Image (cartoon, rainbow, N blue to C red; front, side):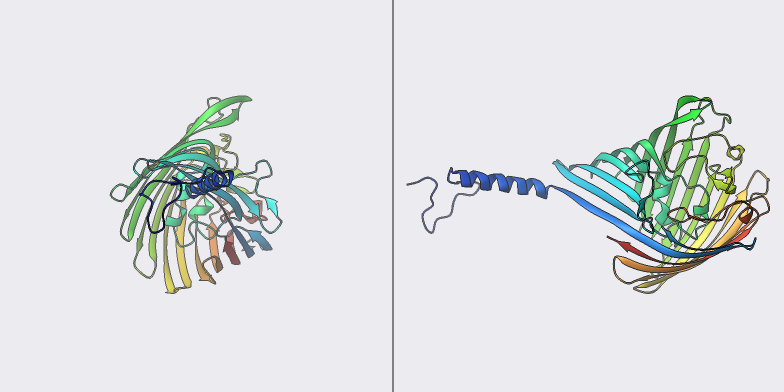
Length: 390
């Protein structure tokens, strides 16, 4: 009997594969093997398009009416991949680039993937290790901050949130009894007095989730460059808490930081740590000034597709220099589908005479008020936008 043939009515013994040794069979086996490998790995394309109309006014009398990008979720294009390596181990990567959808330009013309570019290994039991350009720990906790997910309208977002850094080595633990730990170490190249020096940026975070309640901390310290004009470490300490009461969430957040700098755009319009290239510069005397930011927020689900929210916050200059600001926002979000959302927002922020903070969204506002239209001014805005995720 041909050993590759099974008599009618008889099943092959389990676990035994018998195939004719032919070119066609070998091709089929190769195809099956490729399919099996494909099932253990995947690459996906994702992104968002966020466009909105922005009307803003300053107490100076200046007004802006513009079409802008990035009210809630900066327009972007990303690629992510996962490969199962066996034994619960996975290889992962992520490449993400920012876009300006209203013009079609890239967010950063100097690099292809300005938002994230990393590769890593992950294990369900031991956690995840990543290497490359990554979002900061305070930045990734934005969803826990307020009803806007710490975007346009959020007072905390108007104060130098460190977003992402190059050369970052990060570890994310599994969640143990509700607690997850995260750590980052990034070596940044900075120029001080014409000399290239290496500047470490260290981040630690802890997030605890227990049913409807979440509390956490995300902090960052950047050591001053060796030859910096100002020998002061930059820090950003962020604590948050929120509670899901069924029809919405209650939020409270607190930030203590000196990551603010004066620029031609306003007394507090810049930050010491660059969010674009990860380059650090200690040239503004604002690094010697510490600010405390407090914010309270709540939202409510009117229906399965309609959510409304409000917040209030204050930025306090603890140095006594009078660079204080306060403000609030109200907003509404209507889901046309799982992927498409309409939103409307009203916001206001009052700068004290020496302060010059400006509104910021998921992307920086461009154009925005500058100089005398910011410093000591009250700024108001109304935005209406559409966000589509894919």
